[in-house]
Image 1 (cartoon, rainbow, N blue to C red):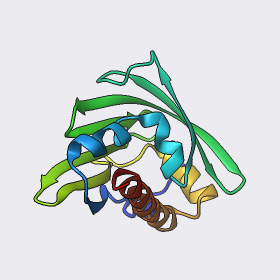
Image 2 (cartoon, helix red, strand yellow):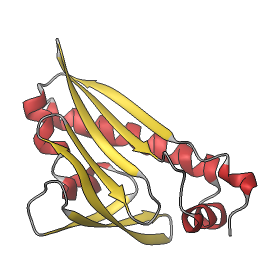
Image 3 (cartoon, rainbow, N blue to C red):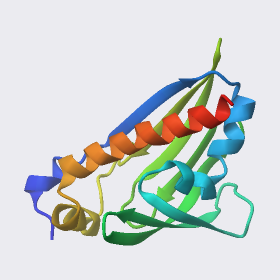
Image 4 (cartoon, helix red, strand yellow):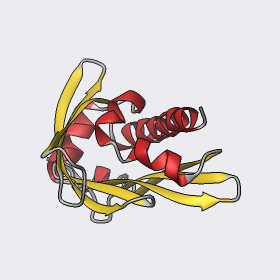
Length: 159
């Protein structure tokens, strides 16, 4: 069970952004195709979409990996505004991940976020502390993963 000593280390908001020299119409098909997360994210190995079409309410199963550790996460699309935002809430840890697109004079500002407004589940805190190096280490890895993800999407969109 997690202690109050680690709970305060959980960031309510992690975010990274990148400017893409491509219009939102070219970026959106990439980030809204959630099974492609495995191509960009250093942690996601595979994503499965239940029911085929991605829209609000669509259920997903991701398989994640860090070194020898492999774990599934279950999620549901909670915001879906074509061309602007897609967000999915992870059932297992109570976080919401999203991509937001903002038009700019030179293309698109692409933002990836992880929000945990009510913190993480007790189970998630405990597992992160025991197996993923603790909150600070794992959250730093998530931020580095966001940079990598957005760099890869940027590269594809600008081709």
